[in-house]
Length: 450
Image (cartoon, rainbow, N blue to C red; front, side, top):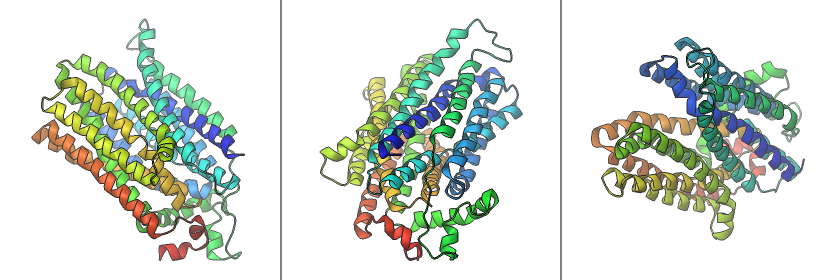
């Protein structure tokens, strides 16, 4: 396939994947409440999901590097289809616990294979082809799919108000059933469109340890599974020792702190500013969709920004993060009585929009530092860093805001975004120290890791 054909398939598969997730997003908590699941139990279900994602991110990324992107993504699609279907019919806490487990497995399995497949296939067709436009459009399509599908998922129950609210299928179940159907379509699409290129042509002597390491499925599935721990360890060492990848992973963790703060504090502050929970729920739903679309717009603009601004892409990412930190500051001003809800809403939308360009630009920098044998593992390392940042924020920033007020929480989020600026600049310096030459990683991995 040509790079253009590959990009079209990548964008289509990404749209299907995240649209299915977005359809069920608005009703999940409402289904819990309608089935009588109390708030402490909901908290345990969320903790179960988050903990499993953290535990599985690296092993599933390593599995995708050893077994193949297509196989792992098809397995992910099975779980992503089963999860909303089970959510629609679940009635008691243990059934919802099974939903959380299936959702975590699907999320972990599907967090990196399609992006890694896209980069591998483009580089197989043309080693010098740019991946920036594809990654930027992919991030944009993901956010648009989430936002548009979330709006549709929130509206669907109103179309089925005549249905019984306490039966096996309720109006709230309809978006979940729609998500399962769309995920099933995604399963078929991934099977048909993910044509995996021959990966990792041997560059080492036949029979050598390096040649065996570069043959991911030589002994079939069992051999691939046995190779996962070594693959994960190798990917983590690479992420830690590479002067470009290390600060970018730390940057991703800081982004996790900022995003989790937005997701937790924003709806509470909006309720306080509007003085009415129902109005706040409607306002936050619209703003959340606007935030997704803002990320999409920012990500789609990333290639144009790199053409307009005569600086390295990581410097462009740093400048965008400066704008995000300023936008968070606007929400903080609203929390102390300046500007009210309008200023807070503008800051919220501005934060997501300005964080949009940095995502694909930093992802491109990571992909330029690794080869196909480690690509999915490194994507999973980034996803793990994001989850860990969110976990730290849940434990610290929420307590800080409860003790010192919303303003203190927003100050912490702004500091996290300032840290992303400094880490992006540090990664840019790493590019200058060590040349970005993919052959270096293909031909001399032991030298890089020594």
